[in-house]
Length: 130
Image (cartoon, rainbow, N blue to C red; front, side, top):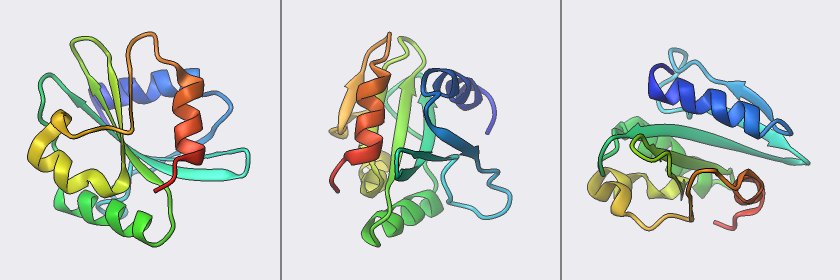
């Protein structure tokens, strides 16, 4: 993780301090999301994306891994930030194909305008029903 995604990670880490976070270095296996989080008997994966426009760069292996994880009972999400206004868009792990095709026009689980409601974001990460 580098560039804008690394900066997003730093801000999330500071704001969601109740979460036990593990950064995953993707050199080990492609497709696995950037972050693993655990909080209050719930765990989830988070793929971070940043964009200056509507489009998101998501690899086929990221689409496949997230879809398979959610299909098998796991919890994974795509979290995209617009660099112009720091708005966050939260998507479920099965949204990868739509995000590749439609970008931020894909209907999100929720949208967070700055300053982010991190407790609401955390609630979705822990309890969202897929």
